[in-house]
Image (cartoon, rainbow, N blue to C red; front, side, top):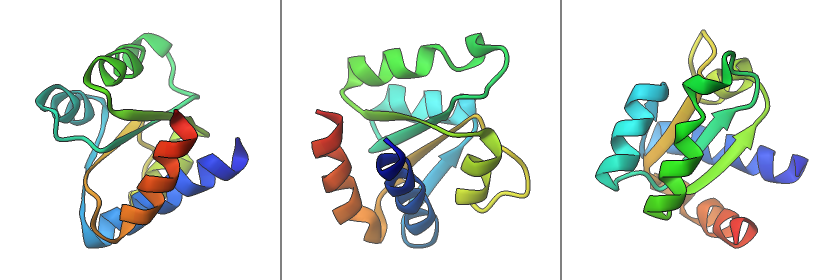
Length: 108
């Protein structure tokens, strides 16, 4: 699982500079609903859990890859933020295409 987490962080870092990402629970929810999210990462230390509980459910409905990763701080850092983030979505993968292909195999 650790390897998958690293790939998710790597994909977010690459997509941040060569593609597009959305940060935060509300933004992520919007892009998943619209169907533009390619990958979603949710921090597992969000409190209360209710804030992000809906994200994996809508991802499943919309057939979007969704991964639970370490902490909000790690997720925020991967997205280049000075603060933690509960959820991040990749909307344009940029150079992270290959990593997303690998992750899609992992998620099946």
